[in-house]
Length: 133
Image 1 (cartoon, rainbow, N blue to C red):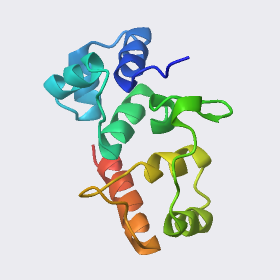
Image 2 (image 1 turned 30 degrees about the vertical axis):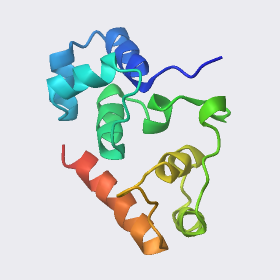
Image 3 (image 1 turned 180 degrees about the vertical axis):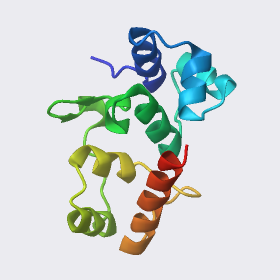
Image 4 (image 1 turned 90 degrees about the horizontal axis):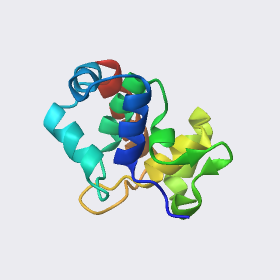
């Protein structure tokens, strides 16, 4: 069974909550145009900070927007390669598995961050950007 695109899940949650595209854009701080593009594209891959902002506005988690199930991440997206430095960081802060897998998909200039401190910086930056919206 194919994994439902993130945009389809966002549009579904938005519709369930009776939110217009404009309302979700306002609540999340994501532009209406970009939000529309995410919802319409099967290939949309919004950044982690965008996912966190949309998840917060929709009252769910970024992992759920990525297709997480109660037992973990959806089968086709299951268990991305998790670098040792990310595992160390995750153990220190007791990161939930769904957030660990979401972070493991992050790339900067085509590469995964290399140190535990880099992962901490990315995670805290995402949290700050979501909190500031």
